[in-house]
Length: 581
Image (cartoon, rainbow, N blue to C red; front, side, top):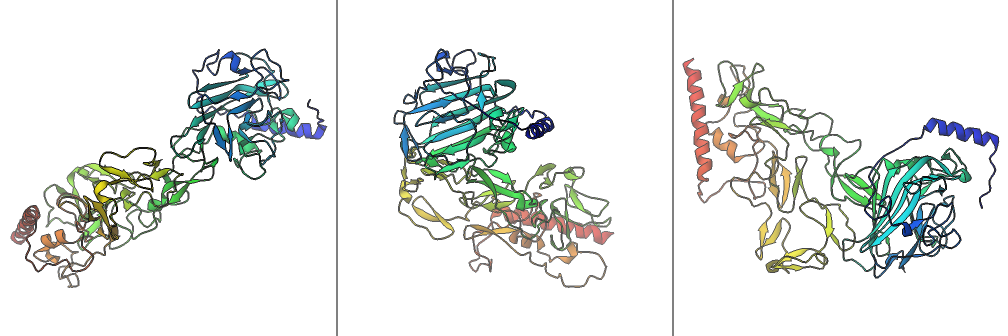
């Protein structure tokens, strides 16, 4: 029986606190239904009778005197492994938790760890369902089926028999989606409504103050436990407004029990995120499992600014700086464009603007958001059309290994194409022609046992250069080349004659480039010149930095030679027009 005294001053303070909170209601993720009974949360024989500080006692006609353990073997035939102990039954307690060794009548949540009381608590607080409203609400029901147990606290009130504020939440236990260890399982907390934190006997008034509810897991051994950091504070209401699932709905919390302990409490590891306090490319991050949720780890560091519509140096401004483009070109809205004048026009498909720039005609009136640039009339990001070396993907204009820094749970591996943790091949059989390796990855049979040096990977039983690509493939982002399987920056070479003084006082035009400038433009990267197809110039090479010449006399690909010839003719025609004028 509860007994307590409330001093007048404490009462007044609590009333003031409650009035300032103004019953913050948070309606979040919906609860699972379809389990029978008037509400869909469970059959009448699987519901707890109206009570305070009781437990499930065998059905609606039972009393609070005799708690009854609930058999969960239909869901988990081998039981569940919770901090080293295997359990095949549970107690559903009114005060927002389930326990495994005995029923728990304690109404004021004690700070974890608690001795001899292993429990899972989606909302350990002073629930009181005597305020009426049954069977539509203010009840607690459970459902057991193959691979799943669901316990629902349906719009429950708080002590003493208060029904003016209600909490609506659910606990879901499911078999794990891995084949890690017998007894592994997943836990989901679902919160649809959070209106009160504290019962009267826990020092609260009007549902607030005193000792608020606690959320988490406790092994009952005074050692192992996990508690949400907002537990036992008014911030516990935020479980309805937040989530530990990357991209998940507010009120959705997921955890994994692996080998008996909490394995990261994480869902969404490897997904993209935004790093708080960072700008530009440095704001690009990846979610890493950490404790009860995920943390956003920065994956891009500041780099030299490039003309791509993106803030590469992370100073908050895109495309700022000098010498972003080659001589005679300037950076305009993420693209290097030629300068022009009334005497010297632009190539076909480009228009000389009032600012003296040769801009794609289809992009004249096109305004693109930050991090994108216009090409052929469309806004594209720095990764558009970019092919990365083997086992890398493009994010925020950078080619990187999506699994770098990602730690997966046991028997899971990082998907090298997405950076997400997925069940390993011990759980998901490999395709025909592949073999499962001890690290959980599938490997082609002809590559089993093959070890390749840095910058190479095995395909078809032989080591291949990770930088190899087709002749028409754009490998690595603009201004970078592939070397040893990585995209690395390449310094922009100066045009021939760049140091020669111009006598006409103009900035660089065709006259400042050598006669074979079209050919040299195709052969170099980072010179800032716009290529014929409107894309930024890039290296398409698997050779290391250094001399790109050849003594074998090998001819350039036919397509490249024709493109160079066409561009050279265009330059000659432009010079002829200028001479006639």
